[in-house]
Amino acid sequence: MSKMRSAAVLALLIDAMGEHGGHCDRRRLTCAVALLRDAAGVPVRLESGEGPDPSSGREQSLSEQLKAELTAMRSDGLLTAAPGRRFVDGITTTDRCRMIRSRYPRTTERIAHAVRSIARMIAGLSVTEAERLASAWPLLAADGETVSETDGVDRLATGTLDLRMTPGAARDVRNLCRELQAVLSAGQTQAVASSERQIS
Image (cartoon, rainbow, N blue to C red; front, side, top):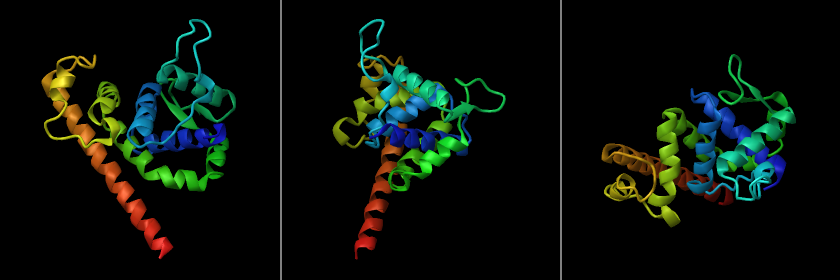
């Protein structure tokens, strides 16, 4: 995915998070990008933060990569701080960014359902809940498996993954994973049906 196409995807996600009533802070956006990649299979490429950290030589986390990408997009005049907020707490797109997004109608149309579904879910969660959901997804839904009603609570609550969850919180996260999986699956089914209608 090209840098401008990735910028268009990030712009769509940032705008969708704002539309669904959540302010788009960097921590929530990191969770949304992780879910867009892991749950919806959208290859969001963050070129500004790719590769090892120049100072330590270790691979950068998604949070560090996204921070570098957002900083670069802000320098390019694509992002700005929402009115009355610091940039880290309230990110919004500029007219220039929305113009770039409009250059990729097929890309944005193809991923719009996934982006809006993830944005809607993240907007309704606390930052802690969003981070738990993004961290738990690869464990509970590995290789596209369906998250069952009983699966995962023990692994999440007993520390297989260092999420520091009570059994109740683990059940909540498992249920969020199931809900997101159902919403994304419904969107894929609709997309297939729509493309079949266009072909026939």
